[in-house]
Image 1 (cartoon, helix red, strand yellow):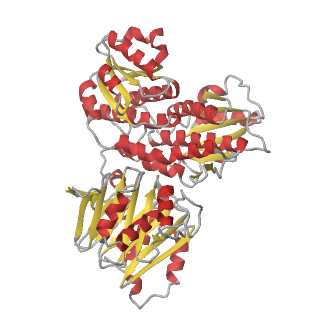
Image 2: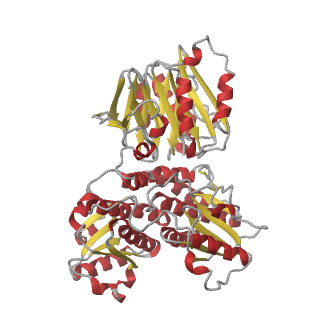
Image 3: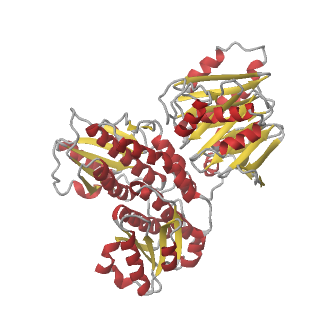
Length: 617
């Protein structure tokens, strides 16, 4: 996860920025850099590797005078590569051609290729492979045309597609920092001090200096000066921000503006997926790179994959079966980790066993992987906890990169593991067939995903309203078809885990083979009814539920007027590529379960009888 820290005030910006970045090191990065504003000087330094490499470079700088190292305005960045490799040229900050504007950036500029072509046509010279560089050239271009810094920033932000956080400095107006949040893939928090202001991508980066915090929301721009800050929307509307006092402890700091870790982790998912994608996809060519997992073994792809997992990870694996078989055309068998080793599975040396486990320590999944090893298969894993047992025993690993997940009920690791399997499917297909137009198209779909997720994560009242209406029900039914059938299972599991309501997930076509007997006016039925290949089939299921007096809560595609006529309540999601739709449809399930649990007064982060990691059989 990329980190951002900014400072304006009387202290040495260098020390505060570097110190803040160090607090965010646990999120992972491959390069770092700073931009410092002095008297008619914009100084930038960048280095690959750890922060200590950047610090060495800063200590070797020939400063203007004895006090110059105390530049009082600055910003820093730790980067995890998305566009372009791990090089000093690709590290942030990036600076405009005239040397007067600097930018740091988290997220993905989805329309970077189009903007780059436009800027090249106007004479812009690019010095990196990143999408970020288009931002600084746009801002500088608008300022050269006569716009003031703030107006140029707003004009630039309005042209960017995707979910991201952006911070800008300019020599032309050296008394301010401008920050923007678009979507939910990059956080922006503003810290308020006495005659000084702080900025970070997450609270721990500045908690040492202030406990008074304001959070930027989607489409908001902050202008930060020593005396304070003001916020407008990208379109220019004034925004009044609430300042929150954060208790000085890391647990409260990590929760930030959220009531529970589960809620926070739901809203972190766009950023988690951005980090999962970082450095693994070349969006210019569509090439997928999984450095820690080579799908080829002796030049051969596996002839079959056995995926072993438990709980939420099992449902992720079920989605992964659709992805790997659909993209790579390699057969996949999904196995309960707790069952695989007890049935003498027909695993061969030409197969791969893929273990999916958030903790990397799940006993049943580890046992299934050991069974695969004993039978001579190559062993792969998808894990969140780096250095865990699952990673250590694997021949290759894909890290989820979701960051710490404190809530017992998995949310962001569920979606990260689905995206990791999408990447694996693409890598397998490319290892067999090489790069193609299909590869490019699949990669481009990933570039849009964090922005689409942000749309579902925008705050709205539907979930609290549903909880108010249905919190007293004791039974729920969840229905889905095709690739979204596992999301029905996951939706039922989430509701059970956190609200203690009995819920069952079914493939919708199976409803009339038994579950239909349960449906009456007290039985809410959640139907995943997006506009896909089985849409008409799902509409039929909705009609059957309504005919028996059931209450239908639909997950539907934005703009669908037909489902609105049939369902009692609708949770809308944006149009998505069919293979990535589970990432989008899972979010309403999570938000509904969370609000139901809160409304029922349940312990959301530590549900009864559950543990974050099941390390015994």
